Amino acid sequence: MELRHLRYFVAAAEELNLTRAAEKLFIAQPPLTRQIKQLEEEVGVALFLRKPRGLELTSGGEYFLEQARQILHKVEATVEDTRRIAQHRKTVFSIGFVPSVFYGQLPLMVRRLRRNKNLEIILHELKTREQVDALKNGKIDIGFGRVRIDDPDVDQELLFDEPLIAALPAGHLLTRHPPSMTELAGWPMVTFPSGPGPNFADITLGLFHRRGLRVNVIQQVNDVQTALSLVASDMGFTLVPEQVRRLHREGIDYMPLEDDNITTPVIASRRKGENPNAVMRLANTILDELVQNRLTGRYP
Image (cartoon, rainbow, N blue to C red; front, side, top):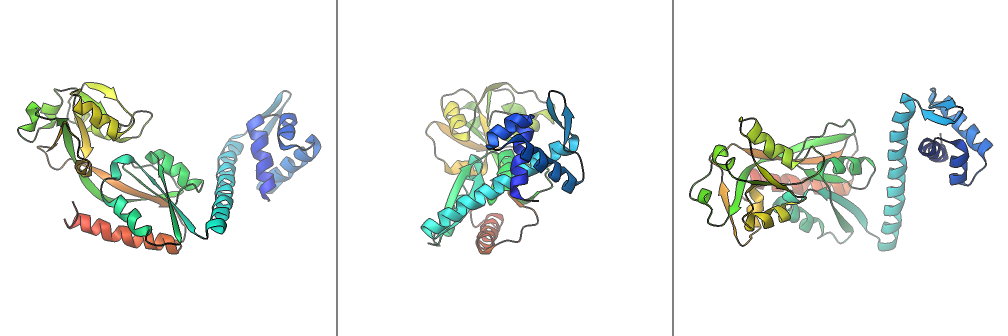
């Protein structure tokens, strides 16, 4: 099996018409038909159902399409990184992250990696689900998020559980003492990020729902910065990870919760079964040290 077989198959699967696929690939239809047939014979299953008006993917074909896309994306990313390395003589290391983890250990990790002049560090702001896809197609090398994603190709490591705190408008009634979840439920709430789950909003809303509490979500936003701006505007409160306290914002008071066992995970995601190269080993060593500092209280 060669890469061209995968490219031909993906084109045929996307067009579901051999004539259009051949035009897209700038080849004649008969050679394309032969290549698809050879691919099916090698795989040992039918990938398409041939119908009078075109093609239809079989269940095996649908799975093979997903895997073929990932392989081609990985090859494209490898070629791109190889060209970049050749031009700059640097090794590229790409990190995915959700914004709420970028106020604690992650900036220190990036800073220490950047001391190596042979490394080019690239950062991608991605939700955890997007990080998993980016790991599988080679866009990133490691991801940092807060949501568990069950995927056979990705390993997720719990680094530590981080306390949640309430971000409240400065001088709010609930800043007189650590508020309970029941007290918070009586006020409008701003959640982030918006969009399909699983996400941080699901985690925070679940804390109320599991306690039988209803909460009035007044606004859903895409990121923590916007959520804090709305809080400062007296729109309501939001729950944030403890490290966000390091982001000093005028008009906001950060309060610990009455129940100090309410936490959110910090999770590292890596490709499963991949032997770590020298850069990944360095990143893992730095990360282990920073996590231990966090766990032993040497870093807030």
